[in-house]
Image (cartoon, rainbow, N blue to C red; front, side):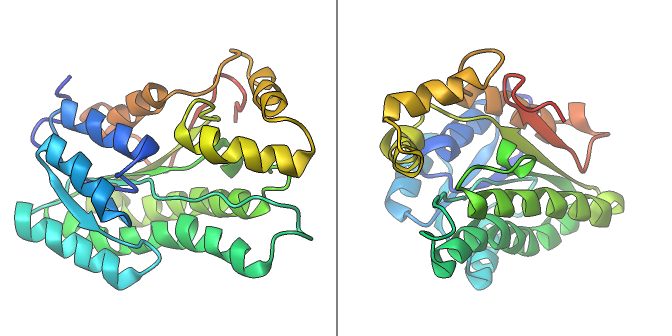
Length: 256
């Protein structure tokens, strides 16, 4: 523990689910955490419990992202770590998913990633550097059935990660991505994705679960702590010679 002692960390989508878990782990590792989310109620709850700060932000709005960065700088004076976690999933076949809904996924997952880095990176440079991690997906490396918007946004995220890593390599800013497997026990899957995929694929929710478990050599879904462990490593000095990487955390399901 305390591998990130004294660091100031910004986490988007930090008010619930995986983002909340990441905020809690970063706080346990010694970070002061700015919990940034479109839902201020949940962000405030998490921030209060972690003795951090809450900032409302819609990552699709670049000016809100800049205001978020300004707020963190005003309070803490620097930003050392940025975790770009805010994302949505809207799945469906091409005939069913209209272009506006398709674009919404790309706006949040890809443009939102860029907007956040655009706002935060100049502040990191002022402080002499930092580390950025995007929470990507195994769908950033392999197409996803009837889930083209999400896969496209995540493929783009890896390209953006590599491009930013090249751009910032001599500025003291490292940029990496984590590509998790399916978080089958998370609220997102239990409350939403099992229903979406069962409908899209014409099978039951339990059959969806078993289908995804069977695809994993280690025969279990990804867990929050699996991602937390890699995140802490990538943000720490132990990963000081790593940038532009997209690390699989998939139980062997994705190996390249």
